[in-house]
Length: 238
Image 1: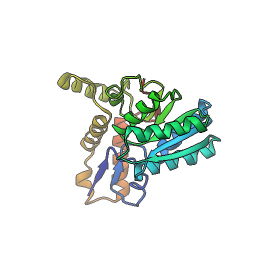
Image 2: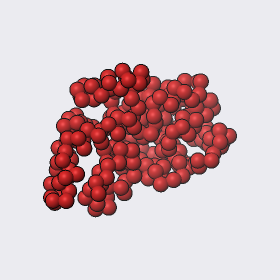
Image 3: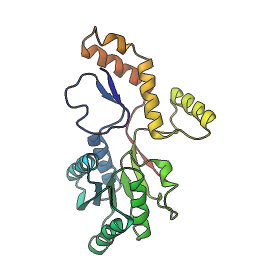
Image 4: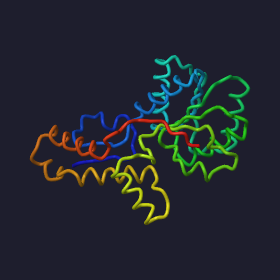
């Protein structure tokens, strides 16, 4: 059975030796590495980590911290939070950091809408340092949660660029705007990717008759035709 995952960044998903499991998004290792290298390039050499205490948050936080060690970026403190945490809990963490550390940036590994609330609380408590996160920093949510410009100086790792010159993307974006009168969201684009890839292959008919390497090759070629300039890049939420 062929499986595509347009949203999972779990590192283990595509490392289990399953020949017909694919993702069209970088895994947590790739996102963590890119975020750490971004900090190094901007001389953010003292960083705090705040992560959701589940498999996704811990996986991404671990990847980021490991790469920071390679890039000589110091992790001054690392703290986790739970899904049940309130604004008060976030405030206690940020107050402790302000009183005990001098840092350049904060890396948050979590999911929307909770991370938008966290960023808003951090800003309310006087944290002006840049905040970095993974692709779960859904852009539109930052403009609907908080009224203190919390999206300012916030960055996310993204493999999705609304200004892309890819004609297939432009056609889809324009058709989406015409029908729904709004820009497509990140996950909408990823789902469209899957549709485009499967339409450009005959994989469903070939799986029963061909070896896995032939199937994989065809899917990769279809993906390249959809994303000729695929790469990870940083996006400023602002």
